[in-house]
Image (cartoon, rainbow, N blue to C red; front, side, top):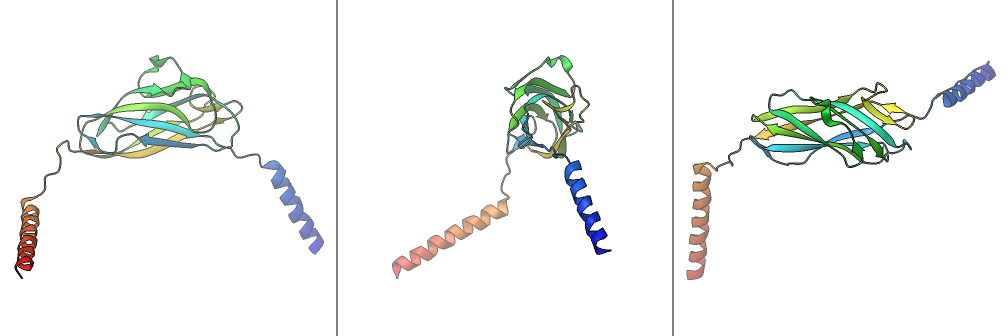
Length: 185
């Protein structure tokens, strides 16, 4: 009985080892280039992919920019230096073709305008379809998906309230008086 159980466990282990192929995974990230975005300005977001471990070159990619259009508005994109493409696709579609190694590749830089004060989510999505969506490596195709929160601030610089300035001034006067008292003594 123990031999049958041991044999079946060993057989299951061997079958699972040979039937599981190499798992392909990429990391997609959005890098907001401006630390403090204010209403009325334009800002850029870079879309990066890291396919480290895939061992294949990235040939084409495509994704849609998913923005709610409430706090910021999508304007345009610029492809990374490894890619070229007909930019007549327009709308929220971003795509490129070229040859890039699988490690830290800039796909595109997205440009937005900041419209209202608040925070909202920005996402990029491209479900691989064998054509122009997703990431097409030499032998494999993968989905692309990433998101980040964007905060739009008021254009006016924050002004300290009068009570804070009064307390700071009182403290400085107190220190000056205390120092003067120590000098006389």
